[in-house]
Image (cartoon, rainbow over all chains, first blue to last red; front, side, top):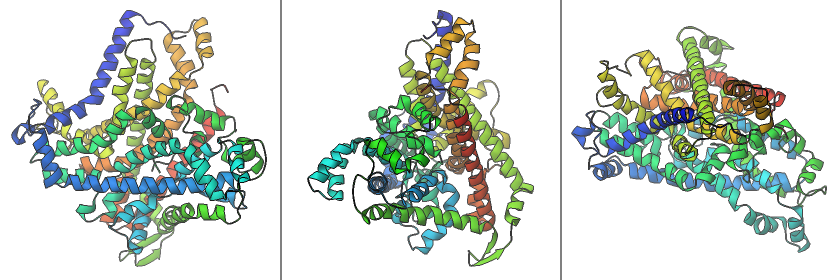
Length: 274
Length: 345
């Protein structure tokens, strides 16, 4: 039973929520308006929408190379997502479907990584990546993030809900374990894979500290770090171009959010990392 | 990359709708059932969880190790080794780009608690604390309002949560521009009242913008969890309070808020780790730690010490301190949550 709301209270609530919506949306509306203005207008306080949006987008994509950085980011997102999904599927299958002496300790090792924020490891990770000879390469952006405690736990949870009888039927037919996993378990798992993919997409797309540290060559950089280049080069000279960059780099995750709202929130709730 | 409490994640599954996630999480370790990893390791429990018969579903002595090998290699190489190495380095003075190590005991840690380093630690604690309290408090308030019987709550919720898809760097650039004294809209409004603050040259103002931007970023995330939790609140205690004549504020303060405490504790962990670590991009984009180091939080200081000032040992000690703080907060949260779970099973 929710309490009935008096009319005056309802009006007050609408006003407060309305103000909150304004606060949440103003920075983004501001960014899009500025992105549409030409050089002189965008560097003034004016908020009048201009007609330069496409020009600014073109400038930032080509002259400031954001197209390349977005492509880099997309490639890295794909590599990490595919790799993580594969590795955590295999690990989860081992934990759920097999009995082996080291299962307990190994599971604890995976579980504990949830408490290890990569940010506190950057110093040693940087040296390690340098020693391995993958400094300033895509490999440095991908390989350290291929293992996933979140993914492993997610798939493990899902596997435990698949009825054992389904697997037994495979065993009766004489299929070997890998075949059972691929032909019986995998088809039931696409939903979870999609949820994980959404988490990874947003998480990797928004990565900042690690690519900033480990990528030297700006051609290979990821999109969020590219924004900071834009500021140092452009802040005072053309706000419209900077904001076009901001608008472009926020679009992919926001589009994913709008289209897959439910799945996105599901994935988001499951953990926006690793 | 945020450390989060493990058991809660463990008990979530994809089939759980968003609305029920925090509740599922709390139930998981509240009842010690399927969410408790310790028990799951026992074969009998595991078997019961799947079909009621003991034993492994699939056979193979080497196969499970092969399946686990890639994950274990990556975890060992890129998580556990760097962790151990960071801990090791924190006891050394590192010179010549890492080629010479001199053991210094706890000197690096001691150095963290004197002079400028101490002010970085204190600043980080204060600013993170403010961000966490404001982000959680505002989201709790908004979720309470969204839970009232008024029109349009769905559209309000969508408009309020969507910025959670944005990155910290994007938010940083937007706030930098919005608060620009020349063309930013904030100063356009303030000039009407005769003031034109230079946000990024006065320490206290720069800190205020940083806090505001971080709260703005985390608000939507917190709101998602709180609105889900509100929808799953048990009605009986609220009805009972109503019958007893409690005012709306009393019901909120003494019934709703305690019922929400597991979610609040969970958000406390995720928000703290956000303020600790994700603030890097915000600081780097907006202020580079300035003016006068006023927005240099620990994670930014770690970066500066390690990669600009080449004080690797000190940076490692600082990173370890952050790690210990995060683990302490996670353990505290797990403990408190276990003690006071308010959702009925």
